[in-house]
Image (cartoon, rainbow, N blue to C red; front, side, top):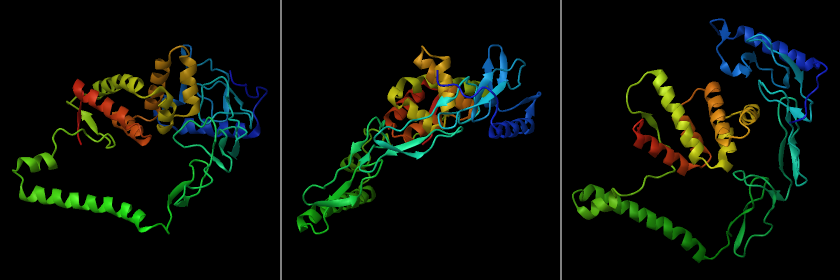
Amino acid sequence: MAPRGESTGYAPMAKLTLCFFCIFLLAAPITNGLPLSSDLYYQEGNIRCLRCPAGTFVEKPCTKPDTIGECSSCHTGSTYSEGPTGLDHCLTCLRCRDDQEEVRPCTATQNAECRCKKGTYCPIDHPCEVCLTCTEKCPPGQELQFPCNSTSDSQCGPAESGSWIVWLWLVLPLLLLVLIVVVLCKCRKQCKDDLCCVLITENPGREENPLIPVQLAFAREMDREEQETIFRQTWDLFVEHVPMEKWAQFMRSLRLSDNTVWEAKENNRDNAREQNIAMLRAWYQQNPGDVNDLLASLHDINLHTPARTIASILVQKGDYVEIN
């Protein structure tokens, strides 16, 4: 368990934060006597409690339904909670490695941010387990186009003073592409009934481009409750087809907070599948969306193949149809 925050009382700033948090709750829309936003609550046994505000943790849970328990402050610089939380501890601050430098310090309400030191880098789409050394020199015949930074290596390209052969190899593919486009356009206009032309221009057997996001819609008319049931059933496909090593990045793209991720893991310690389902459930409660939002997030992090696979399965099952 992460280190517990102070339990002897609130720091002045924590008291002020809690005061504004309570005012917000009183001003929130009310339905049947309860605020509408379900992400403001957590379950403690059979009692539903209000979450503690950012920068604090639950020292003691509530004893009366829909009230806030005792909240204590996180230790600035060592622990934090970035949003409303039902955890009984603060999260441990990130510590930069020896090959990294601190960009943003850890506070009670946000984690620290690190980056590779000068002369090293870590690709942004890879888990940064170690910083790699930047390329210092370009190969013969090339020159530096973009210098190395904390997230990408040095980029080399043909030298401006290169020979005409280098430029020829650059121009020839472009000219060939233009020629192909002209021929295809002419073929479409002048020989629509020609079998060869149809095969060239239409190619009915080609695979769809996985880089193009798919938009789905329900295959038939149904009420809101049935739509939600079918949508929740799709979560199993996302758990099955999104690589486990990419799941954390998937959750970050959905803007799920660290607190919520930890809570899902703590409540389902021995079942990785249920952890991921709990994260999707929390996302849906906080930001009601649909299957297109989940597919778009996969495309945003370059998981095009899993997105296309999931969309194809949903269409084949008959619950959804593709609309683009």
